[in-house]
Amino acid sequence: MYIWIKQLHVLTAVISITLFVLRFYWKWRGTAVMQRRWVKITPHVNDTVLFVTGIVLIYLTQFYPFTVQGVWMTEKLIAVIIYIGLGHVALGKKAPNQMVRSTAFMAAILCLYFIVILAMNKIPLVMG
Ligand code: HEM
Image 1 (cartoon, rainbow, N blue to C red):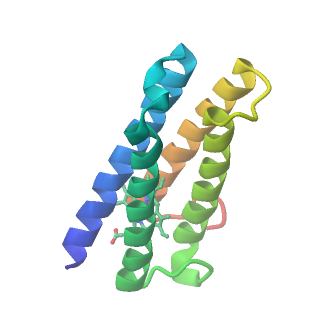
Image 2: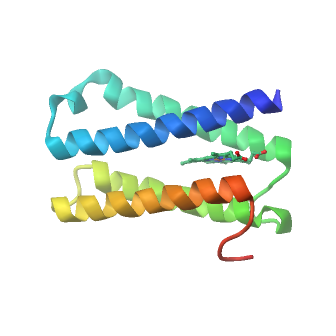
């Protein structure tokens, strides 16, 4: 059961990153694809599965955030929250201009890099 949940988590993580990059590209090009129903719905469905499998993995592995053995998990969750915020700026309607959008996108990619490094190594980067 653990291995299936973990594979689903990694698969949805890959889909999430791919859709994020694609959506930024489509928005930047101003293509009509962004208006399609599946482009609006799929990321939310996928990210819900990513989040739920993440919660189940915490329970199965006992890497609880805000505990001594789960410091990397705490850092990963903080990075996920920052990533979500930056993603909203990069893809949302609120960004004042393309410069702000692009900066938020690049910072979000940097966040994803830290998220994956933390998930794979399970060694804290800052609080260790
Ligand atoms: C952008 C969001 C996320 C990405 C890209 C991501 C990515 C990954 C990856 C690639 C792994 C596998 C590491 C390995 O091969 O050992 C992993 C493991 C894990 N993730 Fe995530 N994750 C994300 C969000 C979350 C969230 C929101 C949670 C919890 C609520 C979570 C909890 C976990 C746990 C507990 C593991 C450890 C599983 C294990 O190695 O036994 N993840 N994550």
